[in-house]
Amino acid sequence: MSTLTIINPKVKYANHVGWSDVEPFEIIKVTAKTLTLRAMQAKLDPDWHPEAVIGGFAGVVTNNSKQKWIITSDETGLVIKAHLRKEGQHYRYYSKLGRHSLSEFPIKHYDYNF
Image (cartoon, rainbow, N blue to C red; front, side, top):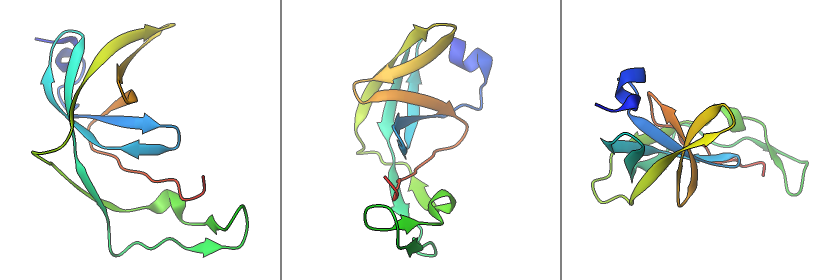
């Protein structure tokens, strides 16, 4: 039994946080200090459209924080390992892609304003 499952058995995702963008990854295997993750498919919900106004470099998307994505498992998605690291008083998971944030649900965010 791993530390992760003892802390919160509802945690099933380790979303990759790349500055202001977030990519969904599902946890497919847990050991004491390692997570095996698989990338998920994320498609922009056809009901959501960016609302841009003049400003910034080319425009500013005013509804950037209200994005809607359709996220599904992908059996052919990239599989990677994330290892537990201690940073000060916090423990975080890192893969070759960078930091992963544990979550009870998958998250996708594309920063249109960056």
